[in-house]
Length: 117
Length: 85
Length: 163
Image 1 (spheres, rainbow over the protein chains, first blue to last red):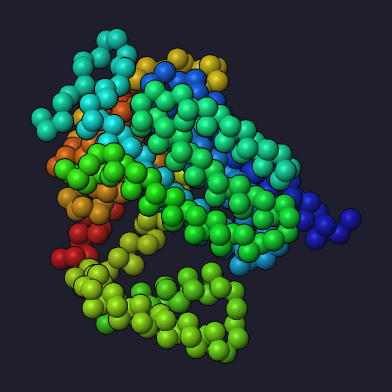
Image 2: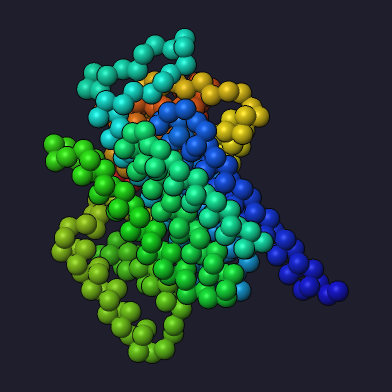
């Protein structure tokens, strides 16, 4: 085996591993979407699929990609996704809070403050 | 490995759809649809690689931009015109 | 003027990255479209005049590196909670004080909180955020304020450039 072969093998293993981790994180986030008790905690599970899933799969594919331009494009998709994710998550939480949905909090915490306080 | 990732994303779709149907609040449904939207970006990219059609990434990019606008638009509609969502 | 040239160069690299074609005709049309977009942005008043956003690029990339590590750590935390391996969820909510003066860096801070799984910003009013956390340690870590300090350092650099 030449050095180039070994480099190629390492690249494939690293890329496949990252894609696998991303897919696993996506699945875990979806399970959390079903298992967690209320809207606000479910939004955290949605955050897992948006960050770990997207970073793992897109960076893994960028490592696997045959040319530099494809990798660059995948990273642009990743940056767009990482800018869009907190925006939609914050918009969702804000809309839910404004329309009067209150989170179930842990027992020994004070009740959530009201908006416009 | 790429097909395994695609299957995992399809399973994610199924679980998120269950949440979208179960609710209970309308925001849970929007959250589930938002998750499906962002996972569609990943699915397009993964399937593009699995079938050696790398131009799919351009479609994924457009989808990433449109998905954000879709979610914000739905929330604006739900909140009403009183304030911006 | 230098601002517009830098913006144009950035747009041009984006164009090259997204198209991947280098025939003379397409390079010429890309130049025309980049110049058109920059002129349009100038006409709309969207090009920053008093400060140089590009001077923030290097500190911002360093900050993103730190944020990536935080994202990985908190992802593991939330995943363990979902799978029932770690501590059970203790949802908490609290107002967090922010110390950034510029809107840009306060937005950066709020978005960083939301991007890290386990915490997200529910409301942003004036200079404080209402934050929901999956574990009460998440709130404590934010009140401890390492992320706030890092965003403040960026903020001071940014405002130093405006003045």
